[in-house]
Image 1 (cartoon, helix red, strand yellow):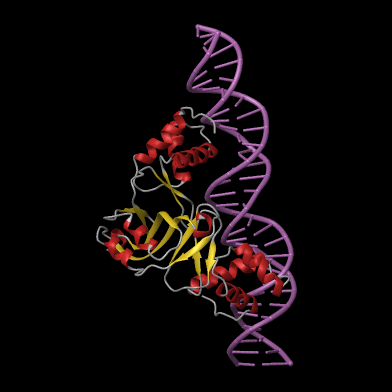
Image 2 (tube, rainbow over the protein chains, first blue to last red):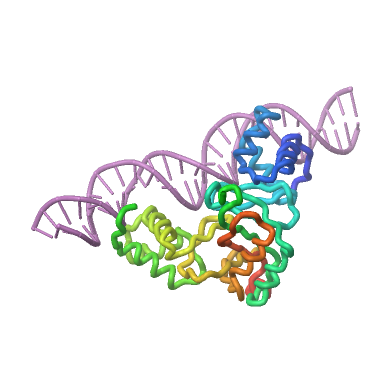
Length: 126
Length: 126
DNA sequence: ATAAGAAACAATAACCATTATCATTATTAT
DNA sequence: ATAATAATGATAATGGTTATTGTTTCTTAT
């Protein structure tokens, strides 16, 4: 594996993700970072998102549509609104309780999970 | 919505999915159904998988790679082995407990979830 | 401060899974 | 049996993502 070098573009992507709680797509990130780096390419955005994900500095959320990214890595879950498709954070009292529960009936070793909840968000429920 | 008409191809796809517990991809399904219908096209497989999913007769499982399909619709969860990438069933004692737990800290309405557990399956653990 | 080596870049082509189009065939209602 | 219409097979198109290439920028050692 190559030694990691600093890059302003990667820094900017990370900073943007950390400032947000709406889990933007690669495209949204691209459009934003472009304001600071007008000739950054979409490929660079994807490359750095993969890199940051591998490093564990961000989280990739795989949904039905395009992947979405989260700059906050503390264990938590997500909720997708069936109406407006916004992706929101859900904080469980005990994130790992889920794993222990499932482990009871499963012969292999469970070391993690990703949950996506569905429903109607409070804004749409009005 | 158009009135549904019977099709032998759709029937065959459904039958195949119900006979299996390994959650095949569209491509695997295509390769199998082809034995019965040598000139079925991949488009037909995809079209019917979408249709069956909308009808609630099968479940589409969105993962990192290609979508996978499950002919068994009783509520249950899935496990993806980090080593061999096989996708296995996990049966929780109470599937909806997860929703109630999350609902406690969430302002919107949660009406469902999809969980994907990660770890090492019993075969790979040996 | 400069030069060498390596990593990151921008641009763009390639890839893969999935969806759309369209002329033909199968199913269903009359 | 006929007409209406949905499903099919073949294939083109799309969208998201990854790979390639040549160039630039960063780091480190001189």
